[in-house]
Amino acid sequence: MLVKAHSIWNDFAEVQNEFDRFFRRGFGEGARGYYPPANIAENADAYVIQARVPGLTKDDVSVELEGRALTIRGEHRRDAGNFTREERASGKFERTITFKHALAADKIQAEVKNGILTVTLPKAEEAKPRKIEIVAK
Amino acid sequence: MFGLQKKAAENETGTQTTVTQNSVTYVPAVDVTENETGYTIFADVPGADKDSVDVTYEDGVVTLKANSSAAKQVEGAQAIHREFRLAGYERAFRVGDDVDVEKIDAEIANGVLKVSLPRKASAKKVISVSAK
Image (cartoon, rainbow over all chains, first blue to last red; front, side, top):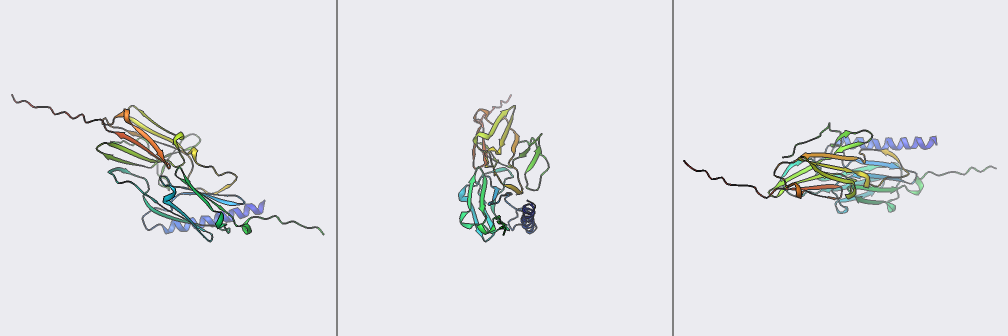
């Protein structure tokens, strides 16, 4: 149990570093900090990423996995009009999150529903925790 | 046209929050457009669907309320990084006399609540001036 807790904190630090790096770097198109906001959850088998993408449909978002780096790209489209108040995000965005564990690229699932993108990223078999049988001789 | 009813300090994600008793209520970001037929409010309410939004009009104020209850909860997993909450949303707008209250209409798609506020048919009247 202790070992497991320790590994989660390590992972947390990894992900946190990645976020920090992005936060410092910023984006060329003027987006402040990192976008879209994302929550990440983890269990023994997978990571689950939920990103806040109001107004986007599945045609506006793409999800790409390269090694351990997950990249979410998308664009907020908006109709032309005479705007008297303009607070919502607009334009293109891109965000990459790098994970510590090897990921099963062929089992990745992504869906966009009600403005929330959910990506389920199963860990590769070799990255899953394994119980080692101790043989008494 | 639209007076802001409630606004709290911005947090780092650019949305504003006001804290109610036990949960967080976001003040959703909105766009407002205006043309000759009326006004349209677009509010970001990710995680909400038709059953979890509520639009009311009372005493010249349109109130938008929503809840992220339609969002898929991640079960059996431990949160390792959190940047937003699946929370409630509330924002109110003061509406001018030119809006036809009976025809206010709301729809939701992909986590964006769209409220249409049509103008009343023109009540313009030319008053003739007589010389004495």
